Image (cartoon, rainbow, N blue to C red):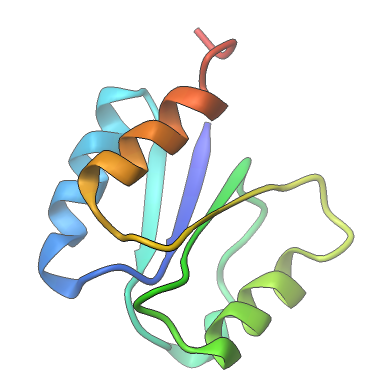
Length: 95
């Protein structure tokens, strides 16, 4: 399963990726705007940490995945436990 995380803290990128790998997910993390988010691809899950990201960045991420079969999870906190809860919910039947 592929996961794209938009937002979050830059110092926690490694922890986000490590947690995703524990759930057998490949992760791309975009803590800040880079190139208009043109290389998101087609992830199975898009995680939006809305507390640490601009409205423009959320709109770019959503427009890149529009029309594709992508599940979207929003969280107002960008903590590891918030990401863990999202992954538990969305990877329950993937094993």
